[in-house]
Amino acid sequence: MFTREHFELMSAVASRVAPENESKLVELSNKHDFSLLFLKESGFTFRVNTKTKVIKIPYGGLEYLWTFSLKAWLLYQAYAQAQLNGEQNLDLETINGYAGTSQLTEYLKESLYAESYDPNKNFSALISVEEIDQEVATEIFLCALGWIIWHEIAHIELGHSSLEINTLSIQEEKDADLYSTNWILSSSTIAAESKKRIVGITIALLAIQSLELDSKSCFKGTHPDASNRIFDNLSQHSEIGDEISQAMSIVTLQSMTKIDIAPMSDLNFSDMLGEALYQINVNKR
Image: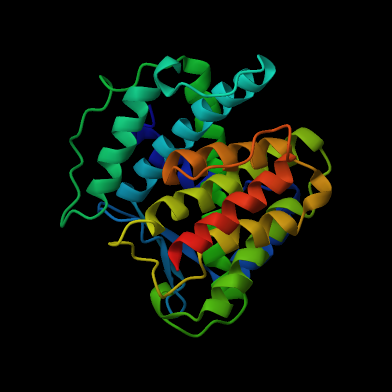
């Protein structure tokens, strides 16, 4: 389980998702003198004050992002195995630890809208998955968080003038998305590392999509539609050819929206993902 001790390491780890860019990171840090501020608050409102250059990270958002990462990883593994077995349906009840993880994810989602943050919650009884799965979820989570942090840094570097993120234009949000994606992926030369990073980016955007489906979402009217953000960011680096992120997107979107997607025999992963995102947009109308 993601514990309080991890918070102390967050800044150093998450902002160095792309270690090959460390010299550029130092240069940007010296140029802007930005900092991270971890807040004991609920909500998924990762944000930046472009005047003070302080990036604000809510603990509630961190908890939700980690459990969402674990849930998506468990779904993906079961989905991949079902495909290998030639199964037509995915029985969620047979996924080890999924029920508790899903319950916790939904609880934390509701907690994001609470008036205050409760730091004394105990989730250990709900999490019953293999340690290796928790470790993988943490790696995905750190990449997802790294993308979010670099998105906020992009607002500073690109000269966006608004003081808080929720007043920025949709175009500025798109520009910050692509800046962060390119920062994390463009210099990676190891295929396995690139795959991990793009999965992290995918999870960050899927987590946002999961909240955007809620009428209480903080993203409505202030950010591009999450489904469009997923497509835009994945298509920028399609040469990676990462079917893992596409498959993870498909099964996670299915679990969130109950949309029907054509079976594997009819469409490839890329087409299936495009169909899923299209149906989400159609259902919004």
